[in-house]
Length: 329
Image (cartoon, rainbow, N blue to C red; front, top):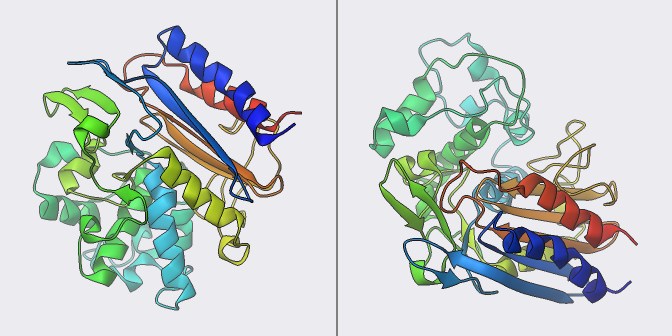
């Protein structure tokens, strides 16, 4: 079956989700190692306070795709250049991290552990409820006494890796070049709306949805904006460069590589992708999966949190259905 035929089949679950009102709109895109691609949009980019159509060129708040499209890439580049040792503790760059208790567990956390979410940090923490001063919140992040728990997927790992990038380069995340086709904000007229935010008292369009990233004015775990084509360009480059893919394909656990997820029972990429697949999702309704064995990648971008996150959008089932149809024969 050709890439186009697979794409046509895989678009059906997205269309059904939009037609039944589970999500306002979305864009599906696929690309192969030869650069062949297909992209299609459907539904609404925004419902309230006005309605706008979704297009193939719509910009999305990519949420946690920032972790893999931006932060992981730059941390691994620093390691390749010998500027950091992935197995060294974060305090080799952030010596003030939990500086008042030199024997605590936080000071032993390594870059590699953060990339693989192999730390005892909690999954989330509402930094934004402690104020809107970004410098004060960065200091809070470094000095708060974190309660250790089981290793889980945690935004704190990438918040800290973002601080590492800022400290090494001497500038804030939003002063970094986010990469070709990406940005830290987008034109509201060209963007998919996210939430009617109860904290900021407006529908968010073209500005970051993640509350912690907003309060920090840029962070390593969220904040990137991009289009389907920009994401497919990124994926096509990874498909064509095996040397650059070594660590993002190297397992660190049953579920994770350096930064990315790998296939496990029930994961977002579905049941039919190869064992050589990596992927990641974003809370706003985004995702990217790269199957190196089959030589193709796909991105599913939705605005499933518009106008509220407190609704069962069916995004988990939708992602798996699309992945299964992309990869089944």
